[in-house]
Amino acid sequence: MKPINLSFAACGFLGIYHLGAASALCKHGGKLLKDVKAFAGASAGSLVASVLLTAPQKIEECNKFTYDFAEEIRRQSFGALTPGYDFMARLRSGVESILPANAHELAHGRLHVSITNSRTGRNCLASSFQSREDLVQVLLASSFLPIYAGLKPVEYKGQKWVDGSFTNSLPILPVGRTVTISPFSGRLDVSPQDKGRLHFYLSVTNQEVLYSIKPQLDITEARMWSSVRSGFGPQKSLILVLIRPYAGPHKFLILVPVRPYSGPRDCTQNSLLALKHLRKNKVNNSIFAKEAIDGNQ
View 1 (cartoon, rainbow, N blue to C red):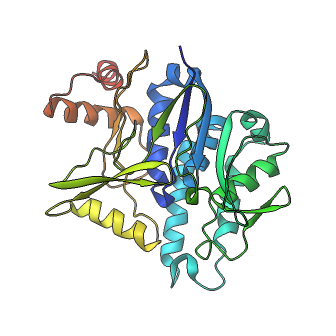
View 2 (view 1 turned 90 degrees about the vertical axis):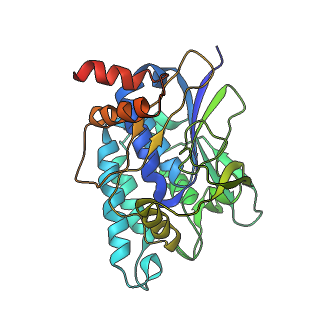
């Protein structure tokens, strides 16, 4: 059997979607995670990949940090661009509080982070971390969006780096089967299933994204996307996570429904709602949702 890799796409504050997927995998995909050889990601995706690999027990803490971070930015007069507000310092504080002391040892050779050289414009997948600070710097570099996050690129190994999404927003590793995860609809293994009356695919730095034109947009969806586009971060809501079956021995489908956020929730509760959705839509290929129902009746 080919090795399995997990790759998380760049997506800004929609990284909360990745946290929903990671939480579901930890709760119901233990066997799958044991078979994962490597983790990869760009920008916010690399942050979630690093947590899932080195500190999966802190995913709920990441949820809280993400919401608090977003709300803090929303309170600023001009968001992250407010004079005196240090976006990168705030992000660093969160990364350092969550990653364990030996995170670099756990991530060495298994975590592949997409970063862009600010001088040459070339992409690099960093996977060698000699110290915890090396790992932190690479993660910050992958999340550095010039102007929005600051004016000075992140330095790493004597060179300056910026957001990995500019050159490779969804790393595909050369060895094994890479399972792709993204909050954007498209040709991906894990993504929202969203098609309007008119739709077409766009290739955005290694990611096939579906652009869909709808007669009208759901209120929750509209609010979420408008807040992300404005750079002020999402409001407190859980994001729809749909993991569909793929070829191979690991078949899974987990759904974390969109609803108002009121603190950490047990993933099995979301799985119960998932099965209702599956039954309503006559989907019968859910392994984990069925297990969740069987274990909670």
